[in-house]
Amino acid sequence: MEAINLNDKYKKFNEKWSPHSIAELNGQQVLLAKVQGEFIWHAHEKEDELFYVVKGKLTIEFRDKKVHLSPGELLVVPKGVEHRPRAAGETWILLFEPLGIKHTGEKTTEITKSYYPKI
Amino acid sequence: MEAINLNDKYKKFNEKWSPHSIAELNGQQVLLAKVQGEFIWHAHEKEDELFYVVKGKLTIEFRDKKVHLSPGELLVVPKGVEHRPRAAGETWILLFEPLGIKHTGEKTTEITKSYYPKI
Image (tube, rainbow over all chains, first blue to last red; front, side, top):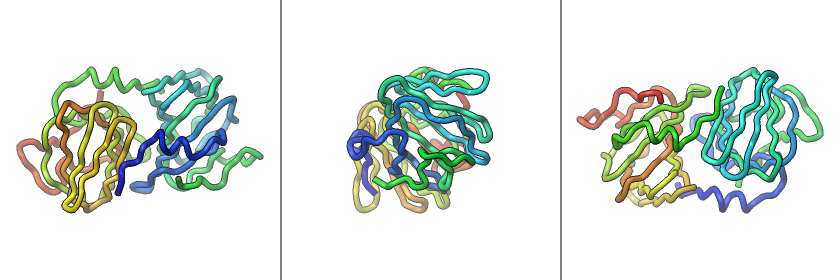
């Protein structure tokens, strides 16, 4: 049981769109990711997903709107809702979501991660 | 589905040790609290609890150690583990924990909140 420093954890990886796990609790996980560019449209059938921006700017596109997030802002994407995250510059995000969630929902593509390393 | 700005939410209340709910997902809740001084010893029988510091400094005491948290740092207190949060100066924290968790565990005292307002 030790303090987890987000900046220290972000130093441990550089790959974009590759979530890394820093904590687990109550069947949920806390993930960090560095993102830049555009992800793919996807939805998580059974899981709500929380996006929190630590550094940079994140846009989450929905089929009918866009939500812009700056550092200190979060958004919960409800289960089943199609979304596409994107970031013009390098952006550091924290995700909170259930263990076992699939990276790109029911789609599997060449960018899909099947495993989130613990750091 | 809108961006939630933590600083804007913190402006909505000033009472110390009174968690306010800003989001719910997957049976969990995201709470904000302003704390200063010493809370009481307690444990949550069935719930792990995540503490994240946004501003200020938080110490979480355990029976055998203390963990100090600065902004950008988090700690998960496992279920069943007695703990006592404290903060010398005003400190803003974010909590992530299951819906229905009891504020002071199985104890009820004059400081116990039975309801977390949504803001």
